[in-house]
Length: 526
Image (spheres, rainbow, N blue to C red):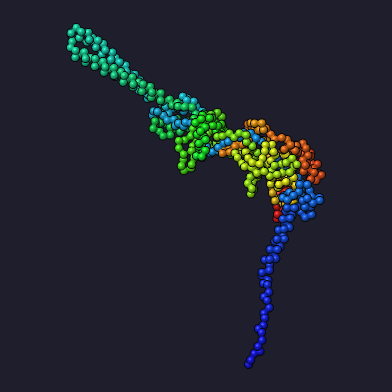
């Protein structure tokens, strides 16, 4: 059978697989959601006028906090002056002398005259060993001395007689020589007796155990009534000389040249000992010397400093933080360390301009300590830098400089919605900074310099911190008795209660607001 010839059937084009469509739909949905979220994040809630549009709030612009009005910040002025540079190290307190008091003679320990832990002076009686055996030895030595002295005297008298007879040629010369030898023999016996007497007296003296130097006595190693020996390893007690006392600490070998230079030049190098938490200064002393070799395993060299320790704040084998002054930087610019911000462009600060806006200035960090850091860069003395609230700022943002306490309350009262839109941060977290413009480097020059004091770092000296504070317009725009600018945003009844509160009640109020904001954020996040 023949089949009909003709063109082959044309198959329809393959349909687009259904499974390849949904990734594109999902991607488009993600892009739309991201666009809406970005607009909400950067420009505020829907309906908020765009920056520059009619009705837009003053100072609104790209960045967090746009459309919310001026942001409350704390600021402090940059100061110029001198900064002490310190090296930090971990040190161990060591007694200047550590002595184990041992008995010099054997015998029964009759009594102990010291109290464990007391401070003794050199020569103080510590213990007594039974002296009677040594008194007997002394009596025997004295008796032998008397016997030999009598024999010597008799021999000397006979010698004088023999010499007279020899002059008369009545005896031989040999007899006289023999008598002279006998006199010398008795003389030697008397000298030996004197040595025995001195030895017995010395043993009797050793029966009284005294302190070889002043210091703190430790725990008693043996009780009265026991037999003690000069060969005992533990001895009777250990004395540690704690006034003065020393601290041994290592420094990096790179820092050794300038330290040795100060030692060679005779410049006094101040060393401070701080507690384990580096919060309380225990004592101030001076550098004594450096070790004669570098530890190749650690690349450090040991230094030794001496402290008077008048208050006994330093204790043997105590761990301390050591700060040693190694340099003085003069005429440098210092700012609070919490004003420094870090980003892709490096370290920078926000400077509050006269028109109430902020601008970013790049800076290079120098020596730091605690709350202060020396800087160099696009910053001048007297310019106010933001120390609290910089996390919400952008270039050109409108700000309002307030006091630290008002800043915390403003964050608490700003509400959870604002906190979510601005990154959901802890309310008032930035207000926890200790400086916040409340103090400044002390004045060593015309503009109150900063004095550092940390190892490898520097900061304002403690004595200088109390000497100068920034001007009131930079940090105290809302005084303790004035109504803060954020108060108008509170409900009328809450505002009225707040105005009647004392400072402690206001602080508690701010804490409650912060807690509510946290809870609201957690609920919204859930």
